[in-house]
Image (tube, rainbow, N blue to C red; front, side, top):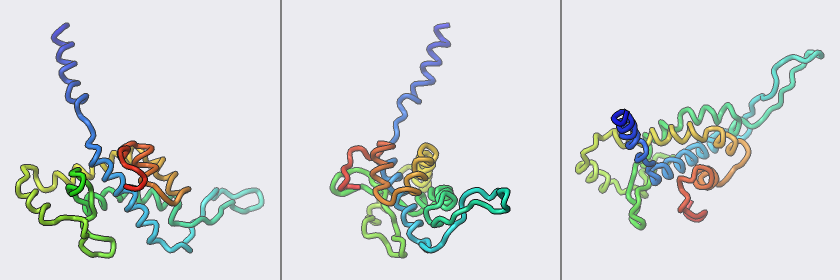
Length: 187
């Protein structure tokens, strides 16, 4: 009996010691919010979607209203299904010169220019000196992204449907507590 108990405890030790990399999760969460905001901003504000009940009432009419498509649940749900691909393909971990912490930074701006925030020389040197395969970091970012979406999808949808600013502060810092050490100014 003692051997079985010992083996069970031993099996649980790795799970208890597994901690989230808060820098990675904070950066990934902020990247998600940034990508969703950018995607919303690219939609024509005049584009509308019919929402409501499509059932026919006794008078032969349906009860639908038109709402802006950009912040509709249908559009936002679609964005959340694809945002992790965008984040894992377009962001890299880069050491912040001031704090020394790892940050997630976009390699190419949305208008196609190379980002001035990323030290590409340092990234190349780090990849040469790393034992990890090149796609390991991409998989780590994608896993973090998918975990965040899975854990906070409803809250993210609610925020972007109803509010229009401070998503990274409200979701990443206050709700998920990934960026709790950061102030409003740093977000």
